[in-house]
Image 1 (cartoon, one colour):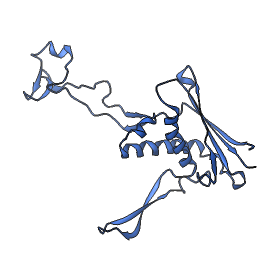
Image 2 (tube, one colour):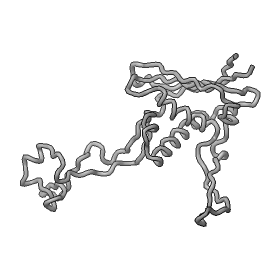
Image 3 (cartoon, helix red, strand yellow):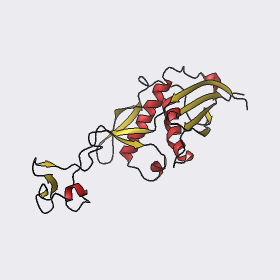
Amino acid sequence: MEETTICQVVIPHYIDRVAISKQRRAQYYEEGDSIPQKYQSDTERFKFIPSPGGILTDISTMEKIIKNSRSVGKPRYWRIAGNDILSGIDYNLRSKVFKEVKKYFYEKFRDVPVIEEQYYPLSLGIEFYDMLGDYDLDNLAIVYRKCLTDALCGNVDFTKTNTGRKNKTGDSIYSYIPDYEKYPKKIIDDSVVYVRKIPTNFFPVEREEDRHLVVTIKSLKK
């Protein structure tokens, strides 16, 4: 089958993590925790308040001792590895990760023209150029393929709409309609009628600054 390239998008330093909280909360040393030696060596200054079962406190200032001082106040990120999606990641967290990656992909394709019907079926090729690490390509593909195809279909954000129907308990039934006005479709659909191939390849690079993703859309029209 002849393949004709329609467009190719190169994404430097592509998204590999998603902020799941704006800032991390402070965590404090509690009685029973492993306490750093610098606090253990000055028991007159650092005490658990109340005692027993309290929080380690600098009694000269009455400030609680922060356990995660290096990360407190900073955003918390979820690293996209793919295997966690298979191992029972929390539904709300998974939804947040997928939504952010879809939005990211869509913005990279926002200026790409709509693929006209004459070019279908399509191949959507994904090439990862990244550092070698402890992750599996097939697991990565689960996230990036799904988010890429959904983004190209405009299935990025949804409007909650009351259907006017009730369930057995009398609660309203809602449907979620894609916001095509904000995220217009780039391809008709991602079913096998329209997308026949999603080849995924990995190419190692030696430097972090060389990380990038290449998405190539090709026509498989005979």
